[in-house]
Length: 140
Image (tube, rainbow, N blue to C red; front, side, top):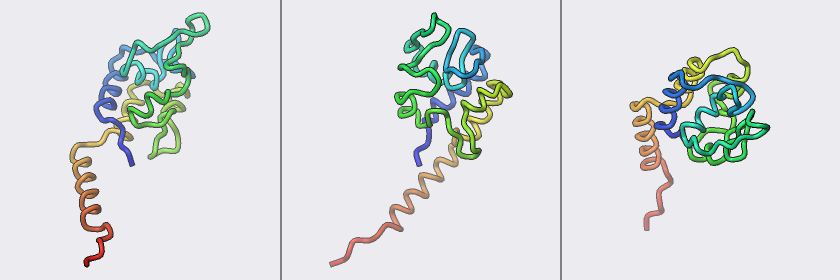
């Protein structure tokens, strides 16, 4: 299991709570604002936005609704921000119009941000399993 980039996750949560980004739906970015996924794109590289449809919709690396592969691979989340603890995604939560960026930031913290003690425990357990529970070589 690959954990999302924790530094970027924390920057994303901070940006969502900043009040700098007006919220929109059904697009990463349009002339009204940003989807929560569009905010992630913007904090990674705000120079990659390209206007489409008379500047009413913007694309990021050619994508207008889902995260492009350049973001999903570098950050470590799915193209719609799939959540593992709930059978939904961040894009669905955002596009429902029922939740503001503060609620979405809370969800990101609960789903993707790993506390330092938990990460240390995970790495320690992984080490123990690799060290003591992998098949031993035959002794000659």
